[in-house]
Length: 242
Length: 304
Ligand SMILES: Nc1ncnc2c1ncn2[C@@H]1O[C@H](COP(=O)(O)OP(=O)(O)OP(=O)(O)O)[C@@H](O)[C@H]1O
Ligand SMILES: [Mg+2]
Image 1 (cartoon, rainbow over the protein chains, first blue to last red):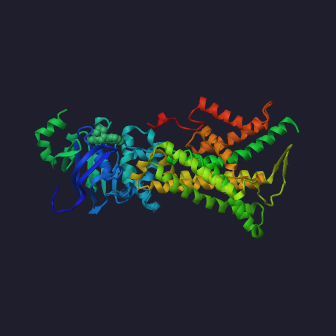
Image 2: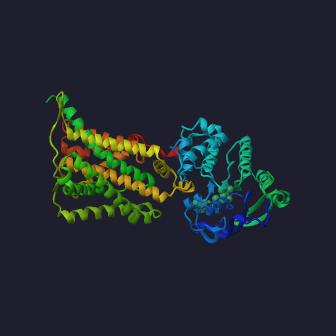
Image 3: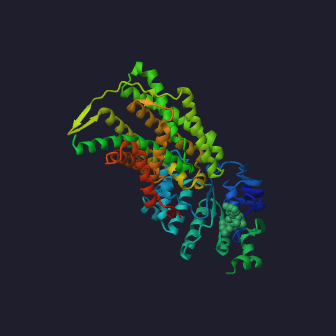
């Protein structure tokens, strides 16, 4: 749970960002503590994806700062941030077309020099997702949606993440697969990975998370412990009432 | 000579020509893959590679001789030098333009091409330079066909380079990263891959392959000219498009196909060798009409 004693692993301070002249984030503050699952909720177009992209430097912050493990990472290259162990699994999975499942995983461990470590991580990923083992020589982009999601998460695990930024990992999946995905998120968290989760399915996300933020038109509208947000009538109406 | 012998002879010429086309087309297609630029200066790196190879050979031939071994050493050094030249060109001319509109970077490439050509023009006064070497004219006779050792060495060297490239691209992390950057550069950054470095490596390899072709072609045909990169640049571009731009096996195939078609095309009654360029661009148009993505290219729709 969020105890104020532990310093945040990730801290956003007054972060603004946008695309050309379009402003998508207006000075947001956000904190994630070690070992937490924090969820970022909001309607379509609220700026959730932009927030994750700004953290991982795919989008430049126009104001404010991002701190990871106490270090200011605003202005680093995306690849440098990934190498710090802050790993972004983007919306839409982005499996590398024309590369096999195995090659996609190998590239996850691009920065790992020791082949033995790569092999070990790949064994762990195959243990978690046996289907990837069976399909390792197939073109990754030809997997089913659910399998692609496993590959996207598996590839992120190859990077040896300290913290994961997950953007709608359950998007487009059948209800059973949505639950499977959430179980995996929980499992990774229990194994020690801190998680910032963007989810359409607010009900599920709040059940999983310790803490939540609600984003609206690029601003943080509400925040609090997940249990409190679940109990809040306005959130229930806006995001949970199907 | 019987008709069959003439055909076999032209096939052999086509194979040699196709090897040069393929080596240059590979760089074209690799560079297009990673930054979606038709690098019109690429043919000129072939020219620069030829000159550097010749200069190196002149400097070392008293020690290592002017035969294939000396040419091999000259080729390696030329590949190294032109590889770095390619990296420098990318850094200075293309890198700052990557987020600019596509047309700007295309015009930049034309400018780089003009700079390279005119530098060579100024240094050579526009004269042909004889590529002096000690290559002999020996060979073996197979039926009615005479194959020179030079032709064999050249085709074998091109094959070795292409096999090495194929190994690099499929079996090394940088090779995989090169293919991955061609598909989704942002995702590569998220995986911790320094995309700028991968682009640099791609320019190095592509430029080095053009230099290899330039040195070998200079030695084989025996002359160099500041404008020699222009036409082979166009042909390599044609070969890359025939094979499917962005596809590495496509560039190899496209180069060979184009070389063979050109050599055989000159044998069709009514089409003399003066028509061979028309012939290859006609082939390009036909491919674009009937298979716009090239022989081994993927269609855009598959990307979704
Ligand atoms: N590449 C882009 N270029 C221009 N505007 C963009 C771009 N991406 C997003 N936007 C705009 O920025 C705003 C925030 O978009 P963002 O993708 O962050 O929302 P989101 O909360 O992730 O939405 P969703 O739930 O649909 O994924 C939207 O108004 C969107 O139109
Ligand atoms: Mg989104």
